[in-house]
Image 1 (cartoon, helix red, strand yellow):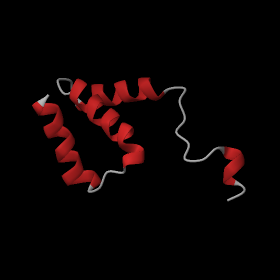
Image 2: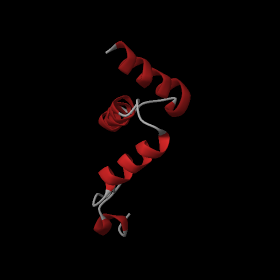
Image 3: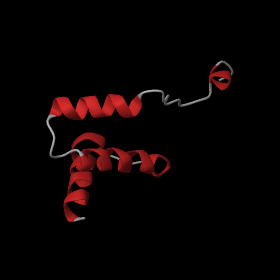
Image 4: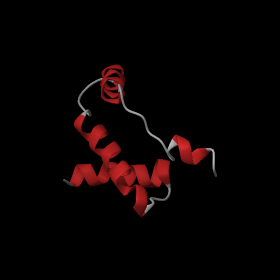
Length: 69
């Protein structure tokens, strides 16, 4: 657990600088992915990322709401 939280803390200090409570689950999911794939190469990690993202969409707003505002 210590190394997982160390990875998360490095992300906060290095990349994110601030973590929103509303999106905390996304930051934790990213740290979880990085931790679980720490023993494979970067190219293998990229392939794993693309396999996991296939068929999924990340929308900030629903398409019908985006036109209104």
